[in-house]
Every structure is written in C-alpha cells, then in structure tokens.
Image 1 (spheres, one colour):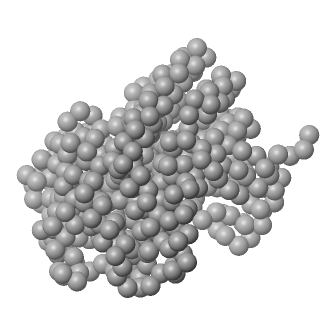
Image 2 (spheres, one colour):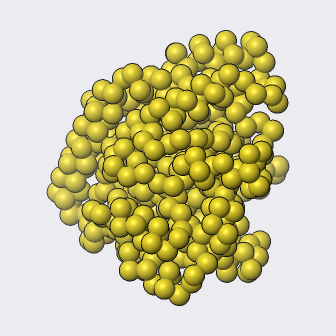
Image 3 (cartoon, rainbow, N blue to C red):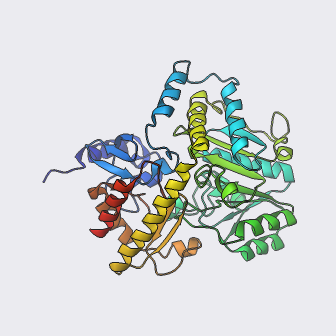
Length: 425
C-alpha cells in the first residue's frame, strides 16, 4: 500500500539538516504523539491540504487566528491591494490608527494600544510596563499558562514546554526565574500566599481561559476576585488574550466575563493570519510607555501595513457579523455533547472543557481545573487517537495540552466527519 505521507516524510528528513528538530516551533515536531509532521501545502475554508494531496478538517486554526476560515476572500483582496503599495515603510500609517481605534471601540475598557509583532512580544512588553509603572520587580504567573518564550515566562509553562517535559528551560538565568512566582490556576489562596510573602509584586498575568494546557475555564468569580486581590496589593492585573481576544466574543474575555484588566495582551486574530501582537489598557498606565514615558519598547515592523490590513478586515467582519460567534458556540456545544456520548459508550474516561469556539478533551476520570488536573490525561491514548484522526482526515492539535480552535467554516458536514472519526477509533 502506498505511503500517504511520503512527501512529508522526505521534507521532514531534509528539514532536520537545516532547522533544529526540523521545525520552527517545537509542537510541530509531533514529539508528544510520535510519527512525522505533516507538511501543509495550502488551506481553504475549514480544510488543510498537505503536500501529498491529503485533506484535513482543521481543528488547530493556525492556533487560533483563522476564525473566518482560511483564505477568506475579503481578507485576501484587502491584503492584495496593500501589497501593491509595499510591504512595510518604517513610518506611521493611517492603518495603525484605524486598527487602534477599532480595537478600542470593540474591547471594553481598552483606552490605548501599542502594536507589536507577536504574542510573546506583547506579554514581554506588558510585564516590563507593569514593572515600570509600579516600581516593583516580581511577577506572578500560573502553572500551565503560557505567555510566550521570554525568559520571565519559561519558569513553569504549558504547551510545548510541558509536552517536551522541560518546564524549566535551560538558558533562563536563575536571577530572572527568581522574580517569577508560580501560582495554581483557579486557586486564589495560592496567589494570596504569594502576596503575603512578597511585597514587591508588580503584576499578575494569566490566560483568562487557559489554552496551552488544554482548554481550562476560570471558576465562577475567580477572575474578579483575582483582580481585586491585585489592586489590594498594589499590583496590576494583566490578561493574556492572545488566544481569547476577539474569539470568545467580539470584546474577548473582557466582554465575555464582564471584567476589565489593567493591561491586555493580544495576538492571533488581530492579524488575520499575519504575524502580529498588541498590548493595551488604561491610558494612565500606557502614558508611561516611550516615547511618552520612560518605559522603553520599540519594533521596526510593529504596525506593519500588511498585517494591519489583514487585521482590520478580519475584525471589521467579526464586529459586523455577530452571528459568527453564535454559530460557533452552537457548533462547539454540539461537539461537546456528542463527543461525550461517544466516549462514554466506548467506556473511555474523559472530561471535556469548552467555551465559545474552544474545546479540549482530557482523557482522565477527574474534572480539569488546573495544570495538575491536566497532567492526569492519558497522553498515550491521545497519541493513538491523533494518528487515527490524521488517517481519517482530521487534523487535531499534535498535543493533548493544546485547545482545539474552530473556524466559522466548520459546519454540519465537518462535525459529522469529526464524530465519525471518534466512533471508528
């Protein structure tokens, strides 16, 4: 029988000679599931197409940004027109203003925003601003939450670091790690204990809905109580909405949970598929940012006109089409219920978390509210399911510690294909 992945295997073998591990981001290496990464040639709507001609229902959505589906015609047309003008100028453009105004109009409590080039850069800059604003040096993050690969965050992380079994990365100086304190997600007492012990905490940063240890929701009241605890102790409350921003709702987690953070980090959807990030928040805080204030941050390609064009087009469509969110939520609710029934009929221990257009299945007999809970999942079982999915035309995240992200083009046909894949596993 012919090998359906022969071209991908050849490309991976060649890539390993020139690229560390053959990939430019660790989770793509399939280390947690085994086998050879699939090399994608193109994508359209809800589907990925690999170099061997295989097609897949896409459940990673480029890790979140392609909520409108791949190769959306309006986004392509807008980007094409901008590219004809040039790719980048290194000067201010009206597009940057348009993007900032649009974001501030949609997101509750967002008064000023600074564009950057990635979610990592947004979170890194947010922490620097928090330290500069408060005059304090320590930060609190939560075990299993991932905020990019900056030194301050690789003290204990989820996603790729968890998958590779190295949550404390070599190359991070001990003195840097000493200024990052770790709390337990959904455990307010663990944060209180840190504030009781340290009086120099500048900020607490978290994913309002975790997506890098699987999809994990905040317990009722957790976000609001955490914000109050931060302010009581003179610390800023930072929400990393790189994944949830403009995905849970037009205004992201801030709108969904009716809460306003001091600083919010963005990425993914705001670039419409182009590399981009941003951080924003209260005016009084952002007036401390250069060139207005003393906290330095810069980027040659920040506010890149092509990325701004893709992002503005995407956000405008989302703002003007609220039915996208309603339909995605209904699709995920359907998947949640139906997948639960299939797994129960098969006698497979599981717990499913879902919210909006995000969903994860943990293969465990306990509820999953934290990093410790997530680690009880049966990763060996997931690895076999992942490869069954590939052969069946379903592209799951190649790690059990990653949320699924759905785009608007996943309809009944694609849902049935997903369910049939689980039935035949």
